[in-house]
Image (cartoon, rainbow, N blue to C red; front, side, top):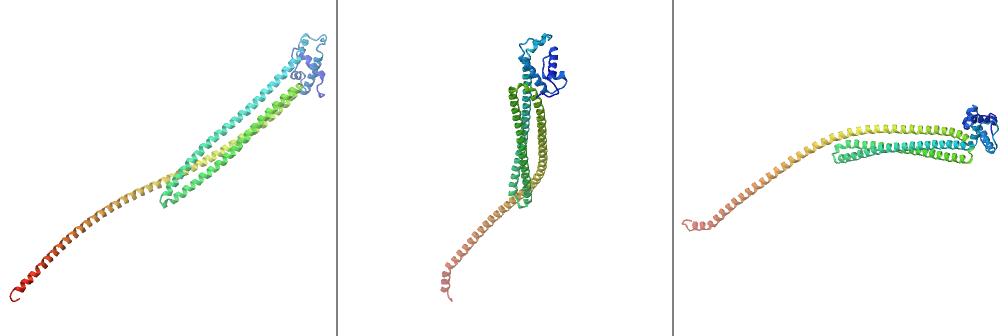
Length: 346
């Protein structure tokens, strides 16, 4: 129902004034002529005036009405429809543009998430190389002497620190994934809401053309509220992403410090390895000296064996000589005894 502020006669006089100066009547122009009034009230009076004008199309215009008024009055309905269709088309373009902006924001958020995932992937690859390096150092330390046990414990501590950092990174990735999913869900819901809203506006336009201006006012207010709410949620999401980025930066700085410590430990391990290498060289030199001493002893043993063999051969030759001499004496002994017994006075 029309309100008491603006009467039908006021709207009719404003329409007559517009027609008199050659302007096409519209809700906005009528309101400009009146200087006040709501769009809903003016739209209802304007629709009633058009209905009466449509019913009296065949009635000759009253005397005194300008000819331009009679000419333009017949086209009023068509022009009003064109204005309403243009307004709805503008609203559709505005809604499509807002949906496109929301989709662009969603793509930018997805791109930021992809960049963060790439940075996290590079960090994970670097951690994997560190773990491989630490495992190699552990194998070298396990093969070294018992005096390197202290360095082995420090390497295990570094591995534990790397594992803790990797666990913290995993937690950060999970938090970022939850935030990203929530942001994408909010954007999807916003897009669905805009699409539903546009469908409702189209249905309302097809059902009741006369209520378009009031619905535009309500839709503009609701859209402004939705945009304000969406901007607020988007700002909160950006703040959360910034907070997560700062936390990731802190974790990266902590990891950098751990890498510096690991480098220092690696340098210490290198010095220890050099010491081990020096000891191995000394051991190799001692082993070489021992081998040379063994070779000298072997030569002396061979020489001693050769001397013993020569002495044994000389002793055997001397023994054989004596045996031969004794045998000769024994052989000559019977003859000597016989000779002594045959001599006189024996």
